[in-house]
Image 1 (cartoon, helix red, strand yellow):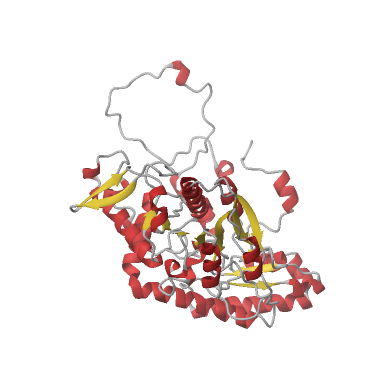
Image 2: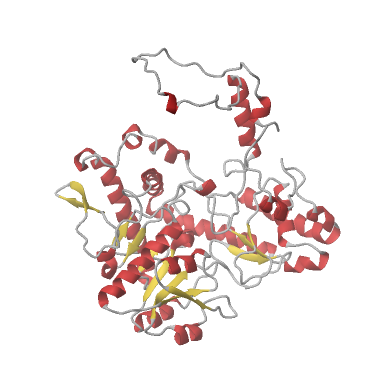
Amino acid sequence: MELIFEISTPGRKGYSLPKLDVPEVELHEKFKRKEPAFLPEVSEPEIVRHFINLSILNHHVDKGFYPLGSCTMKYNPKINEETCRYPGFTNLHPLQPERTVQGALRLMYELGEYLKKIVNLDAITLQPAAGAHGEFTAISMFKAYFNKKGEPRKYILVPDSAHGTNPASVNFSGFKPITLGSDNQGLVDINKLKDLMTPEVAGLMLTNPNTLGLFEKNIKVISDIVHSKGGLLYLDGANLNALLGLVRAGDLGFDAVHFNLHKTFSTPHGGGGPGSGPVAVRKILEPFLPIPVIKVKDGSYYLDYDYPDSIGKVQSFYGNFLVMVRAYTFIRMIGEEGLCEISRSAILNANYIIQTLKDYYHLPYPGFCMHEGVLSGKNLKDYGVRTIDVAKRLLDFGFHAPTIYFPLIVSEALMIEPTESESLQTIERFIETMIQISKEAKESPEVLKSAPYNTPVRRLDEVKAAKELKLRWQK
């Protein structure tokens, strides 16, 4: 496909400007370009067709199935896009007086109340911009909590089945991470936890269900061990899609949890943004919330800065507001029963895939998973085929590849998370494709090793591509 600069022809124009309706002012020479900007010159049909064709080349959730591991590209209902474009939301300025933004404050307040109810915790901040930012915020609150108590705790436990951002969040928050190993079932090793949970440990960051898609069935025991040493328990909420309406984090003993509004509550987050990672906490951590906190009094909503022990702001202003509008719309439309149905359907879809494909791919931890499951392609290595070859071949059938080579504790990992919005027909077509690929691996391995064939760009030399980036067009 030609680049827009290659389509460009001098003299073509796809725009017209209105007549000047303000006094003309001569720009000072220091602000003028020394030479004209090098911009493509194309007609309106050409530019429209160019970008439509680009969008067709890209894989997105409106085009096809996206079984993308724990960073799900979950379907975003179009009504979310309608509400977040209301002029009353898009034309706001964060420095407006509170009395002029009561609707926005009410929406944020009510969203916070819904989220607190979903996890049964006491207080919340909507400021964090994404999941890892939520982790950093919560663990920074842990730090402030122990500093206030005069306890110089140094460490946070992080299971080897946790999300990769957890150790980084621990470091940025002023603690040091200690790896907590898994047992032979892929769950937290209780005996290791007992050994590692000392008075120098501030708490445990737990992903539940973990990155293997397994629910920590000993969660109450884990909670008791951590709390018996005065520690705090944190839930990485990236996998909350498995728990909605079924299990509440507060009931399990968690003291803090972050939400991924851009995963669990359907707001889009492709290409690195936008995102939102609210953090809900137990009462003992409320004094350390980022400021301001949205409150209501006598029917009026306001921003409360009176938190002397606050960790301060973690983002400018109040968070990514239009992402909140999308999530609020989703929660209000889906309702309490709908939240339960989300988790039930996600769990059913994941197990249908994993239990069907375990005869064709290696299943490292037998049994039923939650909303996602992890297979391994290590049984294909005998034919010279790697997991990356499976992922590349999937592209030829119109599917995005799932997450591969993660979690790290599984060799040749394939993490598959279908989400609740995928139909039985889509799930079965994916299963059939995966079975076909496993057969090709045994009968015609070179087909996989040279895939993909039907994509705009064939397989790259990834080392060369990383070392010799070409990010712009030049004459």
